Image 1 (spheres, rainbow, N blue to C red):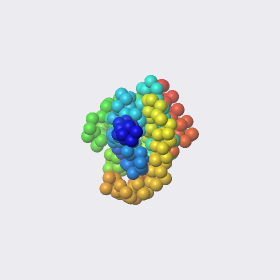
Image 2 (spheres, helix red, strand yellow; image 1 turned 90 degrees about the vertical axis):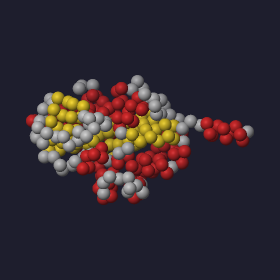
Image 3 (cartoon, rainbow, N blue to C red; image 1 turned 120 degrees about the horizontal axis):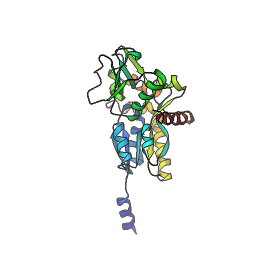
Image 4 (spheres, rainbow, N blue to C red; image 1 turned 60 degrees about the vertical axis):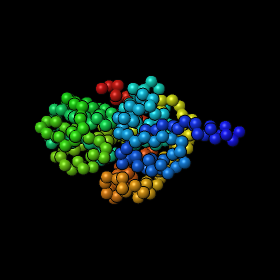
Length: 261
């Protein structure tokens, strides 16, 4: 009997999880890595587009994915009460330009997240009322803002770019101006319903990370690419992790806008 139990534990399949490797996921990563759940999961850190790819092709069981992926999935389940969202200004999803919006002729779109790409297109059509040509970005594109071209840049790379160009537009703030709603960039999604007990425990770990954000920062100073003061401001005042009713409403509206592009 003891041998059978031991064999069952050894052979127990780990739940594969892909998480975005940006600063904004720090409370989640920190909490998961010090929790008992870490023994049951295979935690993989990826850029958002890779998180999406892994979930879409069932290479992982659960992923923190750009919400623009959802229409591409045959079936999906939003498994937790937490997300990567914002109530307004987010500071890490920007359109950079050397010219005013009405003079922009083309926009180079960051390759790392589909949600930000789609959000930029929604804002161009429904908010800014401009019709630029869109180009897919290649690595190293971030500072190449010239002539009538603008760039959409997301994630930690924006920290060094903010304040560099004559014009910059915070896409989440522009969405708030358009809709009056917060924005959800990424949510925890599975393509098959996960075990309810695991989801409950996973949710509690995420909650612990969010409630102890300052502790997560202090424990991860060697990993953070921005000063501690800025990290605290970013993670506590710019990012809002709660997938509440307003954010779910915003998510539904965002998905509806996608059908109109």
